[in-house]
Length: 115
Length: 113
Image 1 (cartoon, chains in turn purple, blue):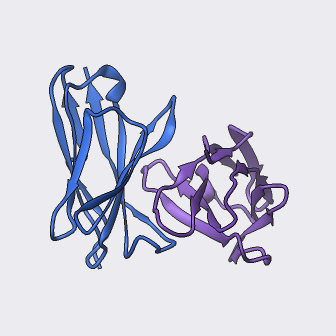
Image 2: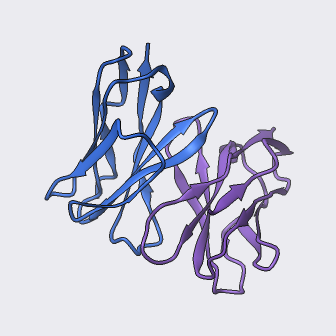
């Protein structure tokens, strides 16, 4: 069974600084997606960034980037120039690429931005 | 284009009752998935529907059921409610089953007393 683990229940960072959220996963599949979702207090789940397992290049979306280490089954999220609006729960998620939309989520990391 | 809508947004039910939650996907999206979010168990997959057919089901008891209509709208039903069913129920839609992105609705907060 696939599992996703986020070992940091809470993180905090000063505004404008950089923070890295950790995620590890376990799967026997070779073709899959990894995602980071953000859930602000409104509870609306928002996709931050995705990574296809077959791509070696790390995904980047503006201030958000990932460090994808396939052999180590590690998928961390780096947020640069942190902003107050980045405060939220962040969930790492996994799904196989073909055949199912089922997402497997980690337990989440609560990110606080200190002004 | 309107996003995923879920109704009702909040619901209070009594143990033993049943409840039906509704999800309207983004126009044109044919795949709908449901998730349960609780403080203890986190986010767990309930089921996935595509073209009115259940494609996947999570590890939940038979009290949890769902369906999808020809217009892609989906409902989930929980019978004989238990206190532990109190949760945020999230619906997500995607264009196809192999689409990489799922768009989530705002959720339905169910409280069982």
